[in-house]
Length: 110
Image (tube, rainbow, N blue to C red):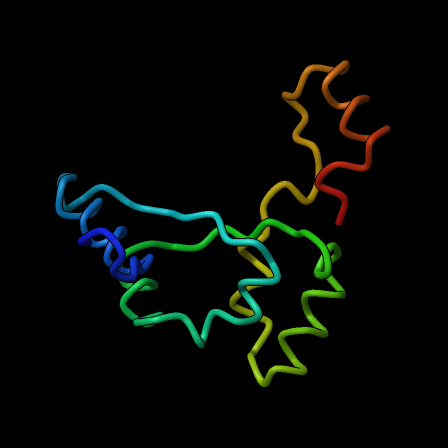
């Protein structure tokens, strides 16, 4: 995009897809608050054809239930988004010290 012109995620994602082999699966990280507003994103259907979203719980949608309620109140079906939540629980292969830090600081809490 030219300097000063709008830049849209769909354009960035399409450019990334054009630079990779066609069989390369793409994913993108989206905050739970933006998942609630995703139907208002420019060309959101095209974005979903290009890449699969991975949802990060964050305030004001910091829990699964908050995300579910937010999606329902905005008229969205929560089901497709709920299975895409990442960092909801610490994986078993995370170092114990890292897991303790995450737990003590309530990072990625859901």
